[in-house]
Amino acid sequence: MLNNAVIMGRLVADPELRTTGSGISVTSFTVAVDRRFVRQGEERQTDFIDVIAWRQTAEFVSKYFRRGSMIAVQGYIQTRTYEDKNGNKRKAVEIVADNASFCGSKAESGTGNYGRNDSVMNSQPAPSYSTADEGDFKEIPEDDLPF
Image (cartoon, rainbow, N blue to C red):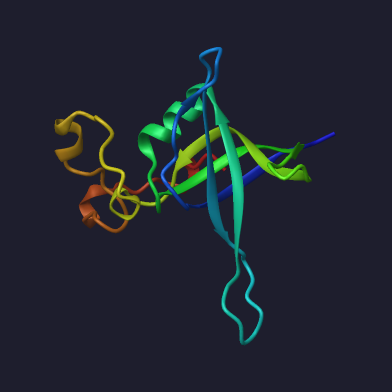
């Protein structure tokens, strides 16, 4: 059997870290995920997916993510039933997060440098296609290619 869920979207609100009676960290949050298709003449629809994270994952999410931050979550789908304050039986469907990751740029997510060493942050970026000069790269003979 397989139960695996991967989503990427934006946090609807700041995650709030709580602790169980036995001292285990937990947080729950909602991720707004745009649907990948749009019906003609309509606006793009968004799904609001509930996520729960435990232990180190909960601490990580609570420390580094805020409302509007782009986040990728990998975990599994869990369903549970409960009774609301009016005595009605309810069913909850949520993702239990095994991993959470940053997505997008720091400026886009507004999440900062996370305590990294300033010298690392202020160093020159590695050459890339968009920032490099032609002399930054060397040509590789075709017979040296690994494929």
